Length: 329
Ligand code: SD4
Image (cartoon, rainbow, N blue to C red; front, top):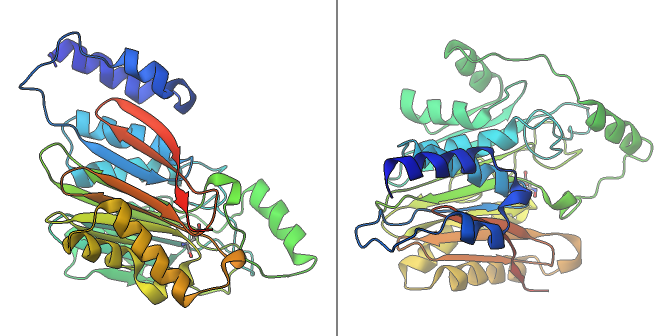
């Protein structure tokens, strides 16, 4: 791809809305006039739910600017963290039962380095603080007030706890009964987990969430736990989960999927095996949802869920499309 065309494509990718990127448009928009044998090998990005589309677009733009797989993993999900209307990621998320938004996030590089923060308040981009933990400390995970203090020391602005209008209304409504029941497939955007395989074979992933709405104050889910909400090993592949975190924590589903790929499973088979284990341990299928995505070292992907409704965004060098995952029930 020549430099002019690359710039043009980057411009389109960076500015086009998700709706404008339907597969039929992208095929024409991004078709090279002549196949080039020396073309850069394709990069692949896959992420959870409908909000995965803008995240993938930003992640692909990061790669096109020359960024690493890790840069793409971070910058992709930052778009979703910054969306004040998103009720399940970032500071716009639904609060815990005390009316406080607490965030969990992690990031992992293909070589096994990882960073994570959990139970943090007032931080717009917990994924970036997770990356700082990875790159600027000798630790993997910081929690709560300690993580917030670390973030401030790194120059990150911490906001006072303030619910968005939308979240406050929902919380006030919930308080009328205080009935706790995890909502599954919430408006097709829950936690965002995003996996990147750059054309050169390097991999990275990220996962960020405001967790379950109306959870007990202090509750931490699977999303910031390496091996549960996310696992990356670029020798094999990577996986990420969304849904009822307690079930994922008990089965380490992302790690399980990567280990299945290590044993020879395709990414799709690995996702199905991880969901099968999870269901075996949690047979009450009507009460929860979990979705899992996997990407292997050759760029093949897989997606599977407990129940219907799990969507994901898949992007390869220029083409972006939404898909519905297969499901067990
Ligand atoms: C959690 N796994 O905190 C997250 C929430 C989520 O779809 O993914 N919802 O349990």
